[in-house]
Image 1: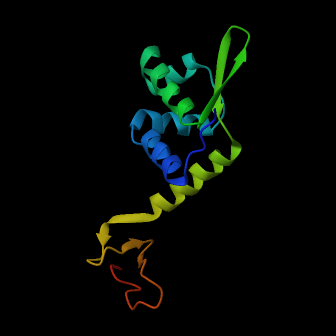
Image 2 (image 1 turned 60 degrees about the vertical axis):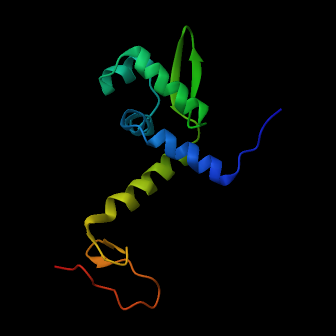
Length: 127
């Protein structure tokens, strides 16, 4: 029987996958294109057993798939939408300046405060 996960469960699994730096780096490498485990292990500087465990986690989360090619498996992102989603997520996260957070919790983004609509906090934290 197939279990349909709630949106919250899906996000929690995604967060778990990203919570490990090696898995996050692995997703970024696969974002550039598919690869074999030996290539991935070399790029990431990890052992094959360690890599296998990370790939199993990412497969279990539905983020990567393995395609048999002869006696080898080629790994790639499960869906091209994920490639774009990771790029969008990086764009948003990299734009946040964690050094300048307003006391109300509004992060400063690209030199301007991200404030609630209608708020007078625009420009807080600008140098």
